[in-house]
Image (cartoon, rainbow, N blue to C red; front, top):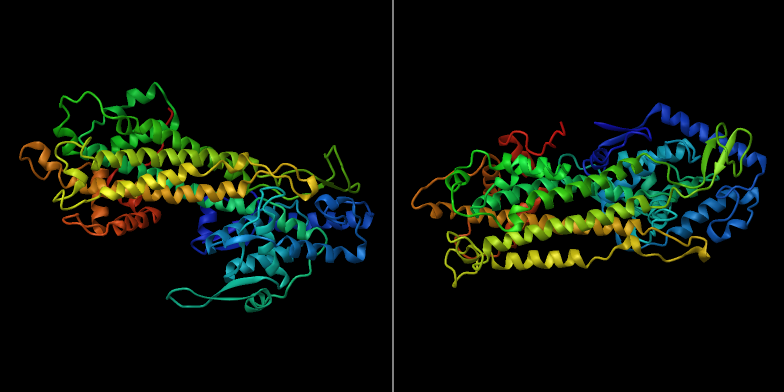
Length: 542
């Protein structure tokens, strides 16, 4: 598969394909035509002698400094060098690739004014495995993700450092760390001398934020399905009722996510001997962590969908400044010629992503919170069902079972709650010219951190739910071999492929880690979908 970049149709799944699966990229012919037209417009403006920000002026607070023609290329080179001022850990391979592919897609919309050779260098680096070494911290989310994008762009100049893939056949990937000039030489490219506007076009945008967010929304969708599975399994093995997922309840409060999670629980537990065996018990209703699963999980679904909507728009947006337009139909021509309008604006500002990332971060924290409460109901002897031994240990007292697994889940939830709302912070920069920033890159980083924790908490619930299933027969006076539901049974079987029943105490961190790996790879969703028709399908509003 090759992902064709046209500036219009890039999806989060495409970003994952390029970033994680090393799919190749190409540029659509129509997009190349737009790039050439935009570059011609830049030349028109330069020939007109009009002062235009980013083409022949200084940057930020230095906007009033006019740059002579013989120093315009040096201006762009200095911009990349000076802005490569990041700090912190280095971005991972997939994070760098996500940033690169989203930057190319923004450039080929045809409003940035770069030459094709700039785009072709980036495409070749992606396809041949040259990944700039990029510091993760330094972006304020306006004027875009400046510092990280500058670190990426240094390699185009033959500067900075890159991690270069070495051909390794079918074995593990081999890499080496080299200088930017050697990295380009490894794929037969020459360093670039940047033309006017190109340095600014490379660094002025939201591509670290949207790249991280695109990876995260795909992962969050996987997590949401896993959380429904975990909650359904816990409901079943604690002898809870699935009546709270009856469509009649959710049809009269028809939030989309709520209806989908409720239907998932019904599908997952269909065919369950356990549910059927206690259908007429005298329990009136369950604790909120079971009974309100559709409402809580569904609200998280809606929050992630809200984020995905913004990510899909941002992936196919022009986010640098200034932008180069055909003057026809442009009313407010700040500068340019009769044929060209070069307009300064604020599309680099990450607020549309930052606020939704914060909302989704809070939502995932709630998802982990309710999962941790269900873990407690599985292991806590003060609230457990009588058929479950304290902490799911085979020899309670001598053994502690999964007691500390719940501690770890609680600690991870605490960490998630402790992350502040980065998007509500503001530190003016550039001498006060850039006096309001979005902090969107930090919001994306925090969201990814919360996502990682949430996977671990949901995995812990699945591990404990599978262990609780070992004791279900004890609840029914000698009845044995009661089958779990179609979907929950598939989940139990998959967990048992990597986590054996806990027959005596052992270090249990590996149990959770193995299940996290299953979840992140999408193997749980695959296993459940193979046995559970319609699982994960949104409820039709009709």
